[in-house]
Structure formats: structure tokens, C-alpha cells
Image 1: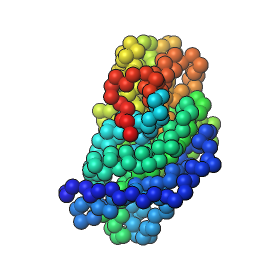
Image 2: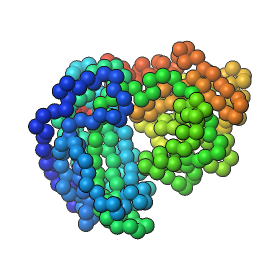
Image 3: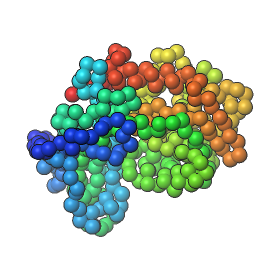
Image 4: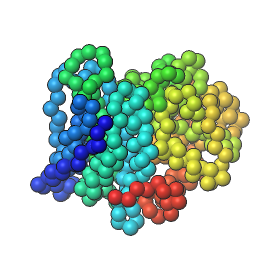
Length: 354
């Protein structure tokens, strides 16, 4: 692969930001003035540009629409206490993006396009970063196969893009979760560890059915016994059992290696908790609840950050949690927010300054 070309920039004449309020924004509904776009053709990346946000012109035969060769990432930028813009752990998302690309038989995106393109794009639209607490600029890099050909094979051409979206909290209130025991999100040998579009498309029916029963999301279980716990919707999950923080292991390749998950593990250890990454069954969880040892359940994710769970249901057994007393999750959220907002020192080098 040849070196990535330079990034051309075309600015909007008038910003959409004028007259737009950045508080109380729904997730993923509004987008900034500019976007990044690049093409992979004949074995090299070309046409790398930042330009005004606009629709795409695609052939009806575009391969991604038929065969699902599409991956994405979720990253956030924050306005620090010093007034500068910072991205939270973008190099980790860059690495994971190319892990997903490899699994989906797609070309890797060079660092100079992914990272430098993201930096330039945010520098251009940094005024879109909200200053309010629990608000941020959501960054969506994605890539899809763009061959105008119908045929089950890896595409020869791809399009890589980055969009920016100012947003408020993803889950504003504590959630009710239904433990899924019929449908499957991922199995060993599959693509559960990759952030590909199909993982999310395949999750929607089970989620919709749970919502009809008054639940917000599902807690996925393994494909064979529907016994071992995996992810909650778009998040990794943690259980505070006794004085330990227990989270499902990544070992089987069925769970996304969340950047927020990894950050939470680091901070939980700093808080003095033992963190255990292991296979945990719903039976073990129920036993811990019945014995009074299961104190808290919460999710972690880029969009969701730290999300409290107030109810967990498996069959007819319902577990309730007082999220106002979820001391571990609340402290974890406070510490992570302090690092992201520039209030606490960034001792881990997580914040990338624009």
C-alpha cells in the first residue's frame, strides 16, 4: 500500500451552528458542518478530503447494501476545563477499527487518514463540542464496501468516512434489562468481537420484543446454552458481587473489547476493587442476588459511558437495584468524567489534545 495522500479541505460558507442550541440533544440526530471521506481503489487510498456534510450518491448495486461489509467505531471528544478540545483514547479505537476490518476482509485504514483526518475534522468543527456536563461530540468513523457489483466476495473498493455529532446522554435514566434466552448475538468463531454493522442489525428484533415488555435492552447470553452472560445491548456489563467487580471475559471472541470497558477496569482497580474477567452464568448471578452479594449492575460504552441498571429480569425472576445507592458505579462515573473534562489529572495519557 502506498502512503496516504494529503487531506484536502473545503469549508462551508455558513455554519449550521448559528442559532442551534447544544443542550438536551438527542443522540445521533444532528451532525456538524463537515465530514471526512476517502476512497480505496486499486490497492491504495485516495481522494481524501474534508468537505461540507452532504448526502452520498451510491449505485443501487453497491456491495455493502447487499452483503453487509461495513464496520464502524464510536469515539468522543470533550471540551476540557482549559477550553481545549480533547479526544478520549482515539488510538485504541483506531486499533480496534482495523481489527474489525481484518475480520470483515477489508483493507486497513492508515493512521495518517484515520487519526490526522479526525484531528483536522474536529479542529474545523470544534465549536460544536457542547460545554455542558454529560454532553460531548460523538465521532463516527465507518467504512463500507463500495463495488457496484452483486456477488458474494470481498469488495475491491471501499469508502471510509468520519461524521461528527454533538450529543447529550445516551441513556438518561437507569435501565431495565431483559436477559435474552432465545436469540443469539454472537458465537465463538463469529464476528462478535468486531464492530460490524451486522451485529447491530441482528440485535434489533430481540431488543424490540424486550421493549414491548417494558424493558430498555437485552442482556445477551451464549449461543449454545443461553446460560453465560455476554453484553447488554450496545454496552459491556459489570456486576458488583461482594467486593469484586465481575465482567464477562473476552476470551471466546463473542464480546466487543470496549475502550470504556478497559478504562473502567483500570479505574475500578484504582478504587481498590478486585476486577474479575470470567465466564459468569445467569445462575451464578441469581445465586449472588439471593444471598445479598449482588449489589450493583451497570453498563459501559462510548455512547452510554456508565449506565445504571435498576432492574434485571430472567424468566420470572426479577432483580431490583437502588441506583441512588450504587456507590461503585457512581464513583466510577465521577472519576471518568473528571478525567474527560480535564478536572482530574490524566495519569494514563487517555486524552488526545486537538
